[in-house]
Amino acid sequence: DAKTTQPTSMDCAEGRAANLPCNHSTISGNEYVYWYRQIHSQGPQYIIHGLKNNETNEMASLIITEDRKSSTLILPHATLRDTAVYYCIVRAGNTPLVFGKGTRLSVIA
Amino acid sequence: EPEVTQTPSHQVTQMGQEVILRCVPISNHLYFYWYRQILGQKVEFLVSFYNNEISEKSEIFDDQFSVERPDGSNFTLKIRSTKLEDSAMYFCASSANRGPAKNIQYFGAGTRLSVL
Image 1: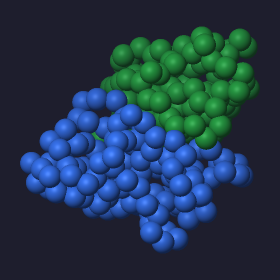
Image 2: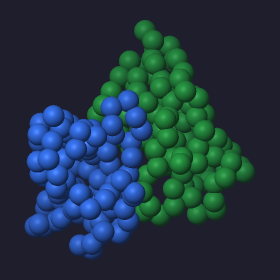
Image 3: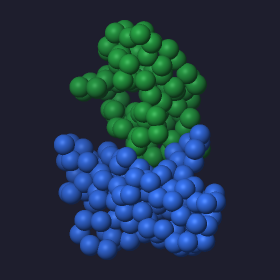
Image 4: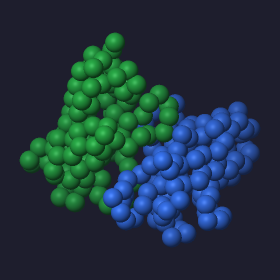
């Protein structure tokens, strides 16, 4: 079973920041936090990952709390194309990804 | 940008027939994976493959399933005798074991398998 808890769904206005929370209170010291998304029934798309420091790339920012028990994925300026299911996954090394149900983000014009 | 390629995009087969789903991983990747997603359900791990052998498999990956890397580029999933419940999207993924993208799994677009 997935070790993370995410809200089932969220809405975001186009052009605004989308903040997607994730709880992972049982995360181990060697586990990273990964975020993927799935647009319709396409293959999961990697977004970003981190261990304990905040991370930013061209797609998003990842904020991890100091105790590492939760994190937030931030899409700074959401567009309609960001409508997708977003998965927060904790994993160590090259272990298999365990997908939960994720958060269905709807970006509204 | 390198990507994982899967063929065919859609496979229709009769129950009891054998199917082979094909994947071309990203060229310098050494870890390969198969996942599946039954319609409306979660993405589920099937098997991982490294150094020409299975490194991990789930309970779903029973004797009906097998994987192979027949040459230097392809990675295949074979279902020996398909059942109706094998109908799903099958995703291939690959990852590198070193470098800035170490351990990041990149997924293909998937093969939709329909068993009639």
